[in-house]
Length: 282
Image 1 (cartoon, rainbow, N blue to C red):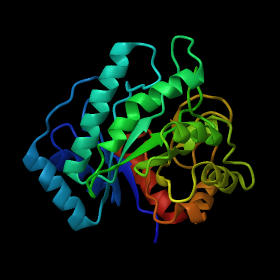
Image 2: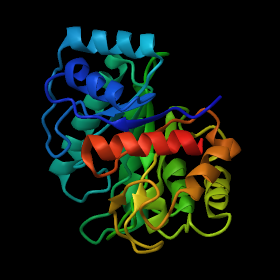
Image 3: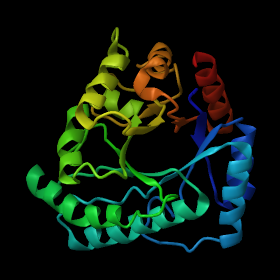
Image 4: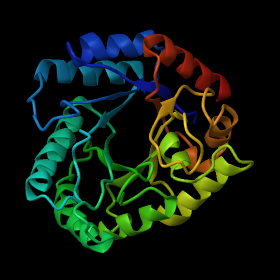
């Protein structure tokens, strides 16, 4: 089964009217959307007719759909209001994802703020996230996909092995998965551009979380070198990762059927070129 390739698409003006129209222009086979303002706490109800139409059209086109939760979510925060809002925000993204037929919701793994120890932050992650995971009881409920960071500040999860304690805190819940961002993992110190780097990184990830947990890849090149701990995306092949590691990534057994979604600069032109490039490498 090949890897569907697609992109994160804008949805202001409607999931179908704007989002799917954009995806079709990119010739995308996978699509990622926000169902709320990524930089806010609002939880918009959405338009049931648009939701249903989006679900139906994705199914008809064989489009794999994904939701990215807002950036403000942090279950490791020492601020009570942030934690409470994070629960409401993520629950909203999970419920809307189910309505639009999305396979998973991507959430950033967050950081231990206020000088907290990592085990304390992870205990809080458990307390807040496990109940949300336990709400995912329907067959068509999405997976919750953890996306590691580039390792800035007091990040809870940036190296492949960091997924271990995070999964352990959540009892390796059956609805838990991983979204691997190539820019983040490279910037975190897994040199994807080194000979065999991509395969080695995926081997480490599988050894840490087990088989079948990798559900989605954010295919982004990096403006910065491996280990720089900076999150700056570049177009595929135009950064310090280069084209070849993406080919190696797609050839790895852990990637069977896993979609790749780009979050790269350059607007529609850049996105179209990146998707075409990944399809060629596939």
